Image (cartoon, rainbow, N blue to C red; front, side):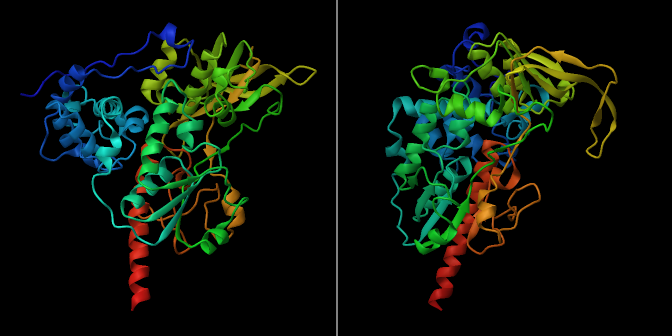
Length: 473
């Protein structure tokens, strides 16, 4: 019988005043009993709108039904039919605006905790079973064709994994020394443990995918090198790693970081473990993070954990317009992050020896709606003030790295740098070259990048199958 409780089973979490001093995971995960209780809230409704809300089409009611029946291994098999990274998605996917948003239970209460259940299943498998035995029971007929994937973030890993399951010889080329892309360098340990990401990457390797690190496509090798090496299709999943800046006075002072650099130092280079890892990050007592998205929340919460006494989120719009997930804003507030909303930086002030000593801001008010329908923030004349900070972290968005475009000038791109690719297939204007994820859309979500990688894998299979058929005519 269905559990008709209107609220989700609460997620156990660390105490805010304990977790804001260390990098251990905030959410602790469901127990078996909690997962079963939450799974019985699913009505297994006829139209299954949650599946349509999932960019990788996980068969959600089916896996939840298996959880309700305590068949956790079966639930894992069902999820991984379409999603190769369930432990990651269960943690960082914005379920509240996708599968859970269209859940029937959300009409009169809270949706089923789909993300929490996905995380539980993946974690249970890691603790109790050898995933290799589960994922690789079906033999795949190997194909002679080779595919190159540029970038090992969520789009690249998904595309590579799906192509490997089809039998293709797939090689991922990663610029960093560690694969994982934004999963490794961008998302902090307290939201996404790196050991877990590595375990998911290992599963992709076990599918037969070869991952080559420290190779920068456009510098170390180029497209012609890949073609000469026999790669008949290429997928570009190089992400959005080019940081945006404010363009104001003082941005070149010591103590100003892009969020990209700051989080890469903290996460990939393990600055949070200094001096065990020799990557220090110099932070002042007071830190300002400019921006209101998930990256800004990650940077602010990381700064707090690294010892900053006061960490401010400075954002020019109102609280209801913060683009970050509600969960991340809630956690940030619990941990003592101070929000300075409807404030906009004007300039960064420096000492005589070139270090940040403050940030001048101006108060904003909401004026008439702009083209997007949102009320435009307007400066309040005479309201300037100086925020006493010694570190400024700029988190106002990233765009695709321009390196590939510079080395492949015939590749069509948007003015802002995004690669132009077919929405359904990821096909670019160059035959055999596909693209997806943040390299196409700009900074977006992990699950949308995975969805793009999955669709491109299908399109690459279709392209190579047709190419093979034509060559036999």
